Amino acid sequence: MIEAADIARIGRHLSGRDVSGAPAIWEVRIDADSDLADPALLDHARHQTLMRAYQSRYALLPTDGAPGDVVEQLRRRYDPLTLAMVEATRTELEDLLITPAIERARATAAGIDWATYAETLLTTVRAAPESPFVAFLRTSPHREAHYRNFVLQSSADLLAEASASALGVIGEFGPAQSALFRILIDEFGYGVHERKHSVLYRAVMRGFDLPEEYNACWPLFDTAALRLHNTIHCLFQNPRYLFLQIGFLLHAETAYQRSTRDHFRYLAKFHPEVDARYFGEHAHIDLHHTRMVIEEVAAPLVATHGPEVGYEIVAGAELTRLAFAEAGDQLLAVSRAFDAAIDQGRAAPRRPDLSRAGAPVTPSSAVRLDPTALVQVGGLGAVEAGLFADFPQDALGRVPMEVAA
Ligand SMILES: [Fe+2]
Ligand SMILES: [Fe+2]
Image (cartoon, rainbow, N blue to C red; front, side, top):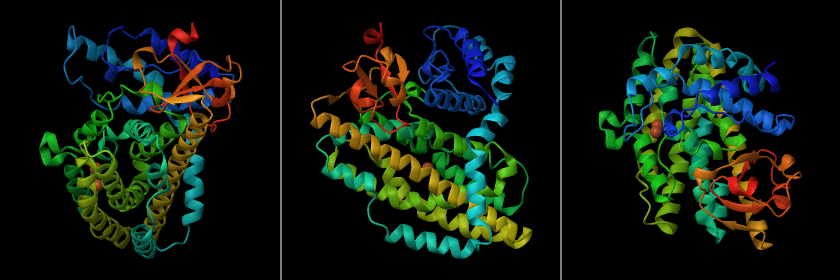
């Protein structure tokens, strides 16, 4: 078991390597000097450690360059001994944080015919009403803050969209692999940088006045956002989960063709100045991606390798459905709690100031703060610590530095 002492040791090592002024994209820190006796903060720091393990698989460069010798900085960022130290925790952290959900999804999926499941999924998604979060936004006078938080929490994965699934494409596994590669090149804008989905997502970040560089917002990700990120990455960074990966794609592409349409319409109505091409593009192209996953990936793999493949695909889809549902429920619960705090005059929408993010605080650790101290909650704004203590358990706040001092 990776305990608080292990997280603290890794955290000290990672922060010791931190070069002040280094671009955020190379950030490797975790919140290991927080109160890890608080189970919620320990859970959060474990998820951050797992996120760092996954991020270390990707080549990352700051958009505008960095002062100093970039070769030397890459050597430092990707120092093999440090990477090995974090990587050594990966399997145990996955077993602790992700595997139970995989096992539950497999139990649900056992014996379910994948083709029937896929057909039902399509019908259900297309017939479903607008998502509860988007419906809530239409009624909230503070919708800009709520949407800013949604965009921020989703950015953990989307600012490097499809880098996780790219790991599921390399290797050698027949015609299905080539179909997956065609989906992947769409995700990468068919080689046109401006159309790459992560680049389109940057425009949404800009639209809500958020930093657009990958990894810049890491201190504000709540535990639910990290859990979703890590669930996706756990699948794609483990080739043994190949068929679960396809289940992920089946659900994600199907659900996305619908949810992105809702978001596109919402933005057009309430934030028409925001560049919403990210959502418009997905509402269109994910119709094709869903069909490709079903016809060119799932069907031939099941035909060639047998029904167990189908059960794994359903398990991957169910895992994905639950992971997105939990993240969505958490987002909505935090937004509702924040609106209730505003109504009491004890919270106010505010853009996050990442230059003074400060110490992390969970609802359970907030009870030890001065109840009137202000806690920044993700992209939402500031709420009094006394009320933050009643927020959903997976929420994460920061006590901006000058307040903490
Ligand atoms: Fe995409
Ligand atoms: Fe897609």
